Every structure is written in C-alpha cells, then in structure tokens.
Length: 357
Length: 282
Image: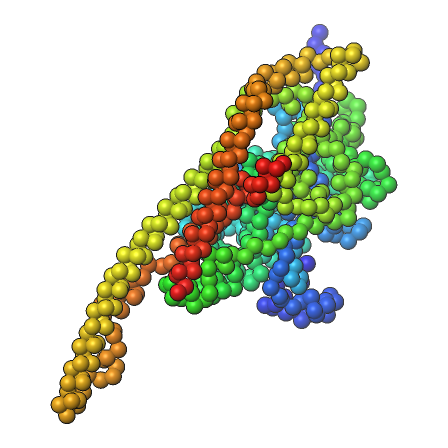
C-alpha cells in the first residue's frame, strides 16, 4: 500500500516493474465517497472517548473516486492540530507525528496522510478559521484530503457520528488568493453552502471481521451486576436532559447570529465610508470633466488627460483596500446554517410527522 | 527450627493474574494487522492496558504490532520506541503482554514471554493467542489467554497456563460496534431524530418485557430473588415521576409546541441568511 501511494506526484518506475498496477486506478479524480475501515472508526471513537478534545491524522489512499481511510494516528492531548501549533515546539512532542510516521513506515504501514479528524466539543460543530486553514494546508499537500468531524457525544443523537467534509475547489482558489472582498467572493461564486462539501461515508469490514462479528454477537457489556448497577440518581445527573442540548444549541446559534450582526454592521460602516469617498471622487472627476469641456469650448487643450478623469482618489483607493475581509462572515454564515440544520434535525425535520407519531 | 522456603521471586511478589478483559478495538487491530500480511507470516504484537486495583484482572485497551524475525523475536529498541509513542497518547496504558496470530503457541514463546515480562516489571505478563484461521470452523471466537507459571518449586522451566479471557466493551464501544455492524449489514445509516426515537422506544419496550418476564418468574418462584437487583429496581422505579395522563399529555404537547417553534425559527434564520446572500450578489 505504502508503495502505491503518492502516485500522482512521484511515479516510481523501479517499483512499477515489480507491482502490476492497473493504470486506470492511478488516475487522480475528485473523490466522491469516503471509505472508513472499521478499525479506524473504532480507534477514533475510543480516542475521542478518552479525551474531551481529540484530533489526529488519517492515513490511506484514494482509488478512483473513493478515498480509503485505512489507518489513523491519534495525537497526544498536548499536541493540538498542526495549524494551532505555535507553542508546539515548547511541548517537546512536536516531532511526534514525524516519529509515528517513521514507526509506521518501519512496520510496513501506509504513511500517506489523507486528512485529519477532530472531535466536536459536546457535539457542537465549530467551523473556525483555524479549521479552514488546517484543511487548506492539507488539501494543498494532498488534493483529496478530507476532514472528519467526530461527534462522540450521545446527547447529540440524531445526526451521524462522523461527517466527512472538505473545502470546495472554488473556495480553495478563493483562499489561495487571500482576498476576501465581497467582489472577489462573488467572482469565485462562493456562498455559505459552497465553502464545504460533505462526502458520504462508507464503512468497510474485511471478511475476517465480519466473521468475528458473527461470533462476538454478544459482547459482554461489563463484568458483573455490581458494575452494571449505577445509582439511578447519579445517572440522571450525568445525563442532562434533552433540553440541555437544545438550549446549548440555541445559545450557540444566538451567539453566531450576534456575531453575524456585528460583522454586518462593521461592513456597513465601511461601506458608508467607501460610498462617501466614491461620491467625492465622482464629483471631483465631474468637475474636472466640466473644466475640460470649458477648456475645449474656449479652444484650448483639455486641462486633464483621459486617465485623470477616471474617478480615483488616494482616499478612495484607501477605502477599497480597507474593506473588512468577508471570510469570517462567510464562515459564520456556514456555521449558522449548520446550527439551524442541527436544530431542525433535532426538533424533528417534519413537525407534522412528529406530531402524528 | 526455621523452615526456609525459597519460592521463585515473581511468584511471591504478585498475585497471579486471574482473568483478561479485551476491548473489541484490540481484536479489530489484531485482525487488521493480520490482513496486512501474507498468509503464513508470523504476526506478533504488544498489548497495552491496565490492571485493576486488585491486580487479578487485566483490561487490555490497546495494541501495536511488532516486526517479527526468527533470530531476534523482540527488538527491544524498537519496542521501547513504539511504546514511548503510545505513552504520549495514552499515558495510563502500560505494557501488559503480547499477542500472536495463528493456531497454538508459537515456537520460542517462552523466550519472548520472558522478554516481555522484563517490560512489565514485577507484574505478570499475559500472552494472547488469536487463531484467525479457525474462525470459520469454530462457533466461539478463537482467542486464548495464557500466563506463565514455573514448573515445580525450584524449577528452571515454565509453562503456560490458560486463564479466562472475556471480550468486554463499554457503552461507547458498543455504539461504535453497532454502527460498524449495521453498515456491514448495509442497513440504513443516517437516522433522523424521529427514527432514532422510534428505535429507542422499541428497545425500551423490549427491555421492559424482558424485565417483566424476569419479575413474574421471580414472583412465581422459578428464579431465586436477588436482593441487589430488587433494590436497584426499587430505586429506579421510585425515580419515575408520577404523572397522570392528562398532565402528561399537556406537558408533552407544550414541549412539542416548543420544538415546532424552535424549528420554525431555525428555518426562518436560514431563509433570512439566504436572502442576505442573494442581496450581496446584486
């Protein structure tokens, strides 16, 4: 596996002699589906269970339009995802991913990074610019990279445990340009719904695994009656009611909407200033045109050249340059959308149907 | 008169391990590591986990494979390196033993076991054997756990004693397993909240009827009553709020109304945003 990976960047001729590879399989295409190995899913879930905030790398390979995730590396709790890591060096664990890769390589595991995963905090997605940046870095290194959002909390029932997302190609281009003005965003045809794309997830079990599942049909949940018996009272306390989830969700939504309002207000203030400058510049150029016309009428040469007539003053240029970046706004919008969808999902996608049942 | 008994050191220092509890993740990774190798190749790896406070039970939580060669079965340097990497992620999990895949105890198992026992200090190491090839023939999952025990009192040799081995999953793992299994059986994956509610209600109803059966059997005197279970049931039932149906219906409807309101508001927010976006494009 490890030998076949990295194929689109570096074809390795000496190895192609030994391994017969179907040329068609080597073609890189946009992926349409993410295939998780059962082990990967279980490992990630376990890692998330042990740590409140867990993240790690995904390893695997893409074959045609299917991205196969065959292994994962959990990161130690002290090591945050690579993008957050200014403080990484201090922790002494900074070379952990590197060493882990070496170890896996030594054990003949594939070492092709195809993405990363992160657990949600209490089941609430957070689409921050950090996440976007990390994913951008991943996708520039490996075009097919995905990000798995893992949602281990049970209170969040109703939506899938894992979601695979990646940045759309349009957004990648936009992010590359580093210009988040409204004009540029519109030029790239980006809207909140096209920042991320969600990919369907498939789980693959090997035949041996399926055989094992048949035999392990009754996994003993816990050792004895004593362990099973928990004090019912503490059980209730530890499992906050469903309202808790909804309340939190609404709280986050309100926060996001407030941010959106502030962002909008900031942009609006800028726009007013910009509009004023624009008016001024237009008035100035109109005045110049008038002077020109007067000069021409008087039989003289025009006072201003054509170029000078274009409404453009230093103040206007400054105003254009100081347009607040719209990236936050865009992400916030995406976030609100996500919250709304979760709430709708939670509250029952079709209230009438809910009532009928 | 003083009687001097010289027991082997490791016999005295720890109580012997009585049972092993294996997390399904470990089984999955053992099987994963054997699907990565061509058939017939020896597969060996290290088990990580913790001991219960009384040290008689071991819970195996994690594992990693090692490279096997006939001449140097265990490369200590490599083992130490991998172990350190795992410690960074899970500082509580220590080496508790090792595993092989294949039928029967492998050749040289005694030596390897001694090597691994060096890593576990004065605690007893366990040896897990998973016979993947006989999966198809046996009804039970072919997994065996052994501890090493000296033969006789002043013996040089040791032998492997089989100890009970259980597969044990916690709640989270069961959920994960169910997910993995259901997708294997290609059932519907993405349930909406309402569908899940339906599934859960069915489960509750099934559990209640099991309980009902148990209670009536106890009442009829077919099964001996367990006071522990009885007290637990009493505690649980005392927690169920007493509601008359009318009040319950009212509460339920009010709540349902709230939910509808919230989902309406969420839809409204989405619509507002969509309009804002369209306006931006003009």
